[in-house]
Image 1: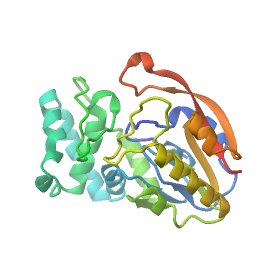
Image 2 (image 1 turned 90 degrees about the vertical axis):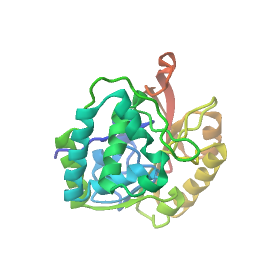
Image 3 (image 1 turned 60 degrees about the vertical axis):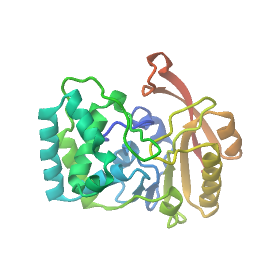
Amino acid sequence: MIKGKPFVKWAGGKRQILDKLKEYVPVEYNTYYEPFVGGGALLFELAPKHAVINDLNKELMNTYKVLCDEEKFKKMCRVLNNYEANHSEEFYYEIRNKDRNKNTYNKLSDYTRAARTIYLNKACFNGLYRVNSKGEFNVPYGKKTKVNTYDGNNLITVSNYLTMNDIKILNVDYKEALKTAKKGDFVYIDPPYDSDTAIFTNYTETGFNKDSQRELAFVFKELSDKGVFVMLSNYNTTLIQDLYKGYHIHLIEAKRNINANAKKRGSVFEVIITNY
C-alpha cells in the first residue's frame, strides 16, 4: 500500500522517529486519536481506518478538510501553481499579509486559504509556522528563489486516505477532541514540547506553557483510567519525568532541525511515554 506523507513541514514533525514510535504502538486498537496532529506523520504511516484528528491551528485543519473535497482540492492546486509562478520576496509578503485585514481575509475561499497555508509553509524561513498574539502569521521570507509547494502524487494519496476511510477532522481544544475516546481506542499525544530553556510554542495565538503540560498529564491519566491506550511524545525534561512517573518512559535520541540558530540544531533526548 502506498502511504501518504506530511504535506507541510511542522515543528516537532515525527518522520525521522517513525520507526521508534511504531515500536510502541499497540498491536490492536479501535479508533485512533491524534489531538495535536500537525503534519500527521504517524497518522499517514499507520493509516488507520477509523480516526479522529484535531489541531487547534484552524488554517492547518482547513487544509486537511480541503483535501477531502475533490473540486476544492483541484482549485487549491491551481492557486498553488499560480503562487509558484509568481514567487518572490515581494509576493511572499503580499500573501503573508493577507491575514492582517480580517474582513477581506475571512471572505477568502477555503481552498485559497489552504493554498496560502501550504505556500507560506514552503516559502517561509525554515518551514516554521508561527503566529503573533493576534493570530497573524509572522515568519519572515525564506530566501528561496524557487519553491515547490506540493507533490501531486502525495496529495492525491493523502486525499484518498482521508476520503476513503472514517476520518473525523476537528479544530477544537485537544480536551474536547478526546472526549469520545473510550476503552480500546488508541490516543497518540504529540503536544508542543516542554523545555528547560525558552522554546518556540506559538503554533497558535494561545501558546502552550508548563501549566498546559500539567493539565495534559491530568488528561493522560483520565484516558488511562478509562482503559484507553495512550502514547505521548515530549522532551526529556525534569517536569515531564515528574508528571509521568509511574508510566513507561522510553528514552530516545532524535535530531531537531527547526531551531533558527543552526548551532543549536542536532541530537536531543526525547521520551515516548505509554500507559501499556
